[in-house]
Amino acid sequence: MSADEPGVDLDLSAFTALLDDRRSNITMAVALVLSLVVLVYTTLDLAKLNDEVRNIVEGDNNWEVSFELQSLTFEETFVMTDGEQRTLDFEIALPDVPDGFRVGSIQTVVSYTETSGLPADPPDSVAANVPQTDMEAQWTDNNNTLSGSSNDASDIELLLRTHPGFTGQAVNATGLNEYQVLQPWLEEGYGIGTYSLVLDLNTQSPPFLNDGDEEITVLVEVVMFKPSAISV
Ligand SMILES: [Ca+2]
Image 1 (tube, rainbow, N blue to C red):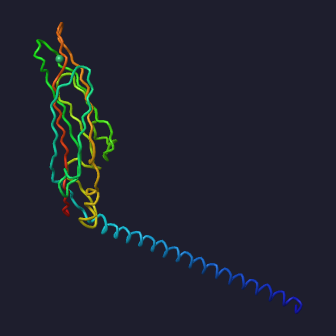
Image 2 (cartoon, helix red, strand yellow; image 1 turned 90 degrees about the horizontal axis):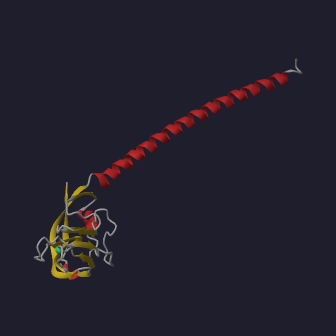
Image 3 (cartoon, rainbow, N blue to C red; image 1 turned 30 degrees about the vertical axis):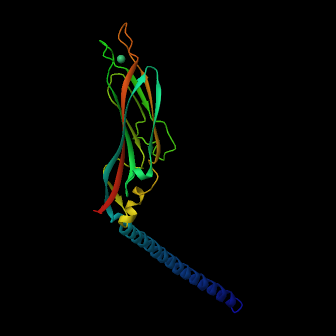
């Protein structure tokens, strides 16, 4: 037996060691799970805190930006001959824009009637196009109407948005303070420069008579705005 004893002792101590290992493994596992729980909880708590901070910074600071409007207008009336193409240039310079105002959009109305006085003279055809110039504007804005035509003497109405997002209507905004909220509306340079309009006239004549020209009136309205913000 004595020869076997060390072997038994060895087996027992190995078993004890195994038990100890298992115990420490369980302890480790419990600690790990607890750590994970704490980590997840902390992460969720941080995310919630982050949302709260974001709400304070952004969401809870709602503003309404409204616009005081003023217009600068150009009006020209002239006679074009059949087949003629004419380009009109309108210069919008910084001194034309009152203090605190920005150029929001440029609206154009091209109008004409049948003035030949000939009996049964059908209305002429007029086409109008606004080519892109060096002027800083929203040239690719979906809201634009940069070309139009008329063959029944109805008006041609065109629109170029110059300042991003400007419709003339008040808009909602979020921000820390009035200064921050107004920044996008105070950017300078939009709508300053040359605005061009290209007109084409094709007269329509009554039978056996010749209607060779027409009088056309162009009204260009440069819409300017001064933004102000109120907390809502
Ligand atoms: Ca005619």
